[in-house]
Image (cartoon, rainbow, N blue to C red; front, side):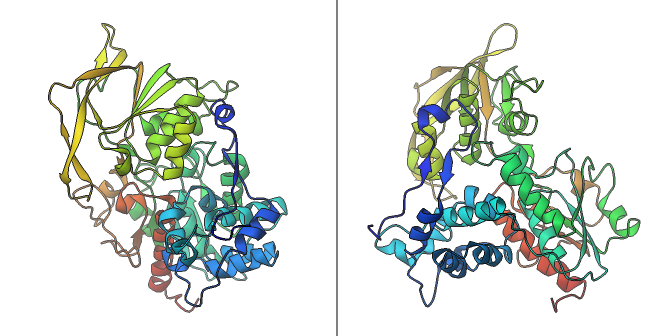
Length: 463
């Protein structure tokens, strides 16, 4: 074996997977995982751990994998992460832990994410669960939202003896893990539901169909429901649009709506009666991971799909792995292209997306080169469905119904990065509700930080 190269990971064939919603990446087997773990250099000053937003002791769990003690490897990871099977699949390790791996200086970094996934899957298959708390401290905490930040905060607090209740607005817990990420990247029943059951096994209670701000307010949770602290991890579910002509036409979706109908409401399953205009010719506007998810979902629903992005491939914000998979599956990338209007027929249905060609100029505030229009370059992409994947912002409902809770100009809750403390005493926040749309692992890191802040606030810092 060439120790400078990663052990390759098996995947579904591109042509086959483009027609189904089964998981694309098949993961490591035991021998492959042990072999990949043996590539770890066992650095005296490991940098990989500093790149992990939840500070997993990566060298320790990788060492246990190499020793074939997979149960112990899972115990190590579980001290830090409530969602290892999720993180092993969807975290951008290439820009975090693996980006700092010393092995990566002269070769491929260790496949930390794939090893984490292997350990979590092995634990699932062998009935291994996180250890429950040994005692209760009598303090009650309410968590708003059952996405990655809420589940992480809840798990950390429950492990340390807190009585935790999660309030979820939708009928099924999981947040973006359930409604936002497609089945072919993150299986719901086998992975997400299992991880949530592990959190519940720590004593966490989850109440669904509770819209905080309508069903109950944050103030009422503190003053009438008897909670000692509240964590807001409600995400950023309010979609953004371009404001171009035709956006109100029939056949225009936000990526949020398109993915929610497909994922949470199972529109991809013929046995479910979920109304959805899948589209025969679909144009997805945007270049992030959500755009890739929407495009690859539309492809699996039978569409010819174009991704429309105003910068070049170099500037695509999506993970390289997702872009690679999308191309393999046959999705067309219209790069340096920007929509100017949605063309409709006389009945108000989408029939095309008029665009202009772009060229890149000097870098803007984001550090990426600013796209400018090439005059007279207008052309139309044939489309009966347009999906806008341009990012999201927090829903203002919670902040607008909570006295003393301040937000910034983007509608994001103002909270300290170190401990999640907001401008309202006893209320903490983290994840997309604070940062705007970001990654699962960053939301988890914010949930952990808030858990620490809540422990300190409630006088449980000895834990």
